[in-house]
Amino acid sequence: MISEKIIVALDISDDKKLDEVLEAFKGKDVIFKVGLQLFNAKGPDIIDRLKENGNRVFLDLKLFDIPNTITEAAKEMAKRSVDFFTVHLLNGRRSLTFLKDGLEEFCGKEKLDVPEIVGVTVLTSFNEEEFHLISGGTSIKKMVEILAVLGYQAGIRSFVSSPREISLIKGILPDVKLITPGIRPKENLDIKDDQKRVLTPGEAIELGADYLVIGRPIIKSDDMLGAYEKIVKEIEERKEKK
Ligand code: C5P
Image (tube, rainbow, N blue to C red; front, side, top):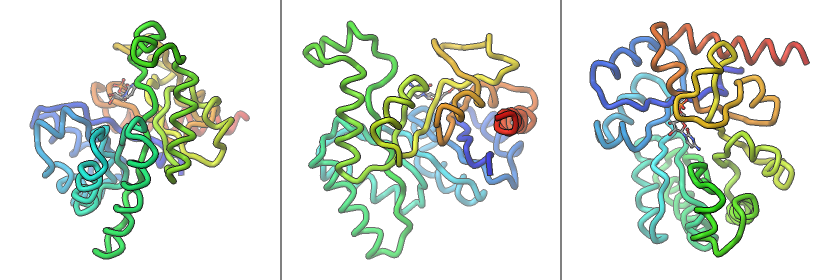
């Protein structure tokens, strides 16, 4: 099902807006992204609320700490039935392996579903010049490749990627799942907000994205469900044309 492919980013902190969004999507099996903003505004109880509503939760807190700390944090997420969560691949292979093994063992013992670990390569807010200051001259592309392979070796099979890195990652690791932001529907492609390079949902899926993270084009719409359904239709039409 195509709507499986859309993750709605709940980048909000306001109670009234949150209620409106949840009301608009009531009864729909939507995947919601909870990021740093909403998590800090509402606390971890927001996860329980979304799960009680029947939604799936993509918890995007981009964990980056010592192996024990990220693993214990991940166990808390599993207890709340988070479906996917993000970690920086810069944690390193040993730490990521420790996380994956520790989480699987814990979930097995507690009879919990194991959340999907999603690896973050290089934040797309970096430009090449700024990135070289911390990488000692290694390019962003090269580092994305290094980190994706390292994550794969640690058993991670899902990654966040910008649309422009889809073919690079899928070229080396064809069996991974990619979650891609920076998407704007065809009809409002000119409203980029702060996104610099955007693709339409159809284009991103065609390039090989498995999930699209879409926030403002849906959340800021007067008809949120309508905007969501239009995107689903756009993807379906694009697929039919192929
Ligand atoms: O509102 P918009 O559709 O631009 O939201 C995209 C979502 O994806 C936001 O939650 C944003 O934090 C996230 N994101 C992004 N660009 C990245 C990584 C994540 O826009 N490179």
